Length: 494
Image 1 (cartoon, rainbow, N blue to C red):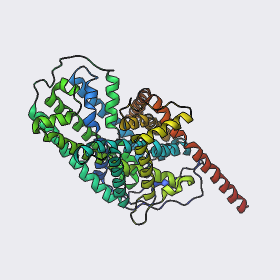
Image 2 (image 1 turned 90 degrees about the vertical axis):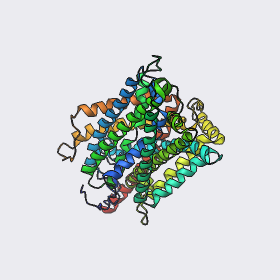
Image 3 (image 1 turned 180 degrees about the vertical axis):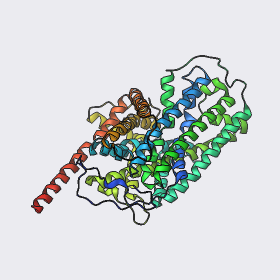
Image 4 (image 1 turned 45 degrees about the vertical axis):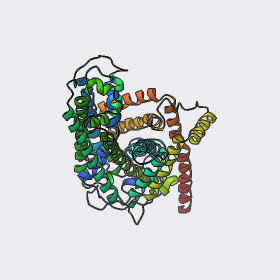
């Protein structure tokens, strides 16, 4: 693939999305232009990953380790494992810098049906569920600062607003991402300085050696906090010089995220002490309150709002590329592959993603929506959802989407091995070092997370998998239609 500024237009071919011997995917670029440079990619990854997790997860992590050093070590290990995964994705993304990321790898490595199910899963479970969950965090803090309006309306409004921003164009969306990322980093810097300024004498003092379920749960939460770096693969077709910029962006981003996460946690420890951090419900707010009084809580709310906006914006931007790629290759969803001639973006993919996200927001955020979902589950033979067990809409969406997310991340890791075997003579601009050991570590990590996320989600994992499997009839519908078209074409040619 050339690294020129403008990509070629898609190849026009006969329908063959179900032909496993043909892999010249139409989705390889969609006629895109390469707008994103190194720092554009970095801002997308950092903005997605450094979201609400750095404010919510530290107490859980330190409650499941015996010393503060163990907790910091878990954060460091999470960063190292994420770098291992990033090296694997760097090889895949530079070898196949096409629109859609994992969709392309899974289609090429396994079967078009697997790639299709990935795109379907992102549309109905993973991406839309993540955007919906983040929108509820935004709504919770926004209602504290600005109004007493029901959270569900704030959540819906932010998704619609940022969808419009990204429809206008990738440059506008990218600029928004730059500004939000810079704002988050400045806010985190304030938390760090406040923590060191207060400087608790009990920062690393262990008064109680108690621990929760243990290091396993701590690792799960840390890897969840680091989740999202793979989103860069979805905009690979819009990156200038992908062979050089994608590996750099992934390594720079995760290194920055790891460093920031450790320093922020050290700031929490200095500000609150080990026991104080363990018992904290909102560590960042408490640290700022120690330095700035009652104004600290409002400052922290603004930081969290900016952080969530950044994560939502990045997720909306990258998610649409997967659906657009799927639409170009599968006739059933061809409407998703249409690009706006005016804005140069997959406008319909954005709108469909927005619509499904809104359905999720109102589905889990209103009494009528929850009742309707419970009735549906009962009809198909499943139990009602334990809404209170997962802390409402946010926790329910996170728990329900995690197993599907880790399943496909595991399959993407396996695809690296398969594509190496299938394309032995392929010249790669970047190869993962220490092959096959690092990819094996990445696959083992994904399997570990998949297993534990299923244990944690319980019945919710069945709900997520049911939504995923619901895409199979649509795939075979498209397969049948395209097969008939090919047969008619052959008959005319005879």
